[in-house]
Image (cartoon, rainbow, N blue to C red; front, side, top):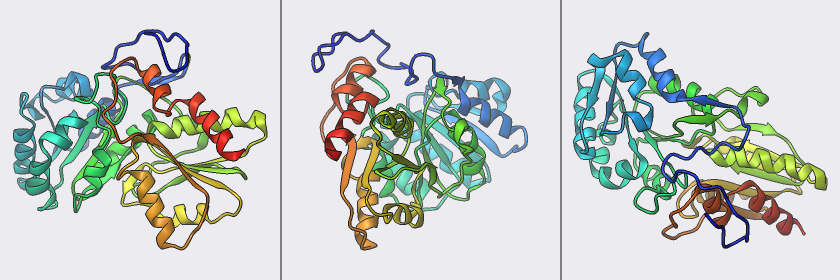
Length: 333
């Protein structure tokens, strides 16, 4: 596929399930499926449910291990959420998987009325978040965080890599109440192992410090932020990276503390539209706390995004490492 915005040629990749890993990057296969299967050995109350997408959400591993606890509901996401609520009322802990667009757009009212209002123990884990597929607006969940942040009782998580996902699974299973978590599936990059990281629900983690820029990020954009920080070392630019895996409830104390350190440009980076996600959440936190800093967003535009190969789209919409690096350099100039 030709990249008309840069003049470069990109290798063609599968638009639906292309890996977000860079060439040569360490990955782990199906971290969610493996983590849930391992946890279910200790938790007989855990069940797996999906809407015809077990293979594409890595839930097929759970199905193979526990076929009697696996429920394939067909292409009926509203039924999926309603049935999950019923199981939760009877004491089960359903882990429900589908694509993020189908949960947040098609089944929103069912999550709102049957799961969230009753504060039920349902864990909704959704693949293809943000711009992690090239199949166009029908499959790109660019606004899912905004929708789910607005739902009362709902905890919202955006993990960075395989380690985040593996550690997230037992944490959300132990949490009482509904959870919406974005899911990276297939061969998922391993990034956080170099930083002594441990996932804690509701906690942001400072992965590295720097004197010039603070990047507050979630999901795959934490991976990009770390890559940018390394790249900018050659230009003597010190970049701090604060990873925020839990979007709701937000770790306001850590965000305010780091943003208050003087002399730094604060950038929020997210694989989500500029409207209603982490960027606006952080901006609101800083405004209410009286913290006045130079502030920028790296995010997807408020638009229906194109279809195509992911590397091309990430360049086009400013969330690739190279474009993000160049933009930060221009903001500091």
